[in-house]
Length: 268
Image 1 (tube, rainbow, N blue to C red):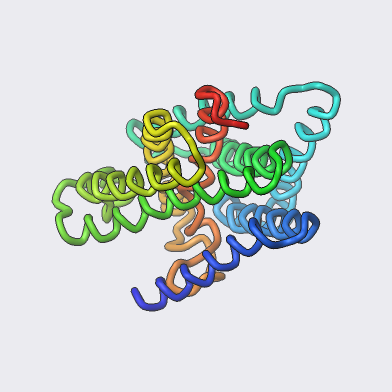
Image 2 (image 1 turned 135 degrees about the vertical axis):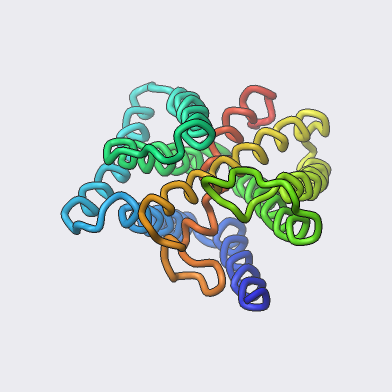
C-alpha cells in the first residue's frame, strides 16, 4: 500500500506542477475547475446518497464560487469571503472537539459548502489575481507545506505515536504525528521562503497557521466520512482513496493562507 501511495503521489505532483508551471491559461483553468467539480461530487456522496440532492449540492458549490467572482468584477472584495471562511473553520473545531456525534442534515450541507467554496475562491485569487508565475508558485508552496505536514505526520505517527489527537473522529491520528508533520512542513516553508524571497519569520508564522488549518481540514473530512459510513471519499487515486482524501488538508489551509499573505504583505 505504501508503494502505491508513493507512486500515486509522485504522479499527482508531476501533474500539479505541470498544470501550474507549464500549462496554458485555459488548460490550467479547466484542470482546476474539473478538480473542484470532482471534489464536490465526492462530498455530495457524504451529504446524501439521493441523486437529485447530490446534483443540487454540486450546483450550490458551483454557484458559490462563481457568484463571488462575478461580484468581484463590480468591486466586491473576494477577501471578505475568505475571512468569513476563517470563522467557519473555527466552528468546525468546535464540532470536532465538542459535538462530533451530532451532525444534522443541514450541518452536513453547510459544512460541505464551507469547505469547498472558500477553497475554490482561494485558488482563483492565487492564479487570477497574481501575475504568472508568482501565483502558481505560491499555490505550489502551500500545497508543498500541507503535503509535508501529511507525510511527516504519517511517519512520525507510525514511529512515535502514543497520544490520540481526536479519538472520536479519527483514532489513527496522534499528537506525535502532528508535531512531526509540523516540523517537516516548517522546514519546507523556510526553503520555499528562500526560493520566493519571502520574509522568513512571517512565512514561518503563516506556515504554523496553515499546518493547524490542514489538521482541522483532515479531521473535518474524517468526521463527515464517519457520519456517512464510508472509509474513503472515493476511489479515484490508488492508495489514497478519492480526491478529497488527498486535498482535505489543503482546502482548509487555502483561505488562511491567502488571508495571511495579505495580512503580512506577501501577496505581491
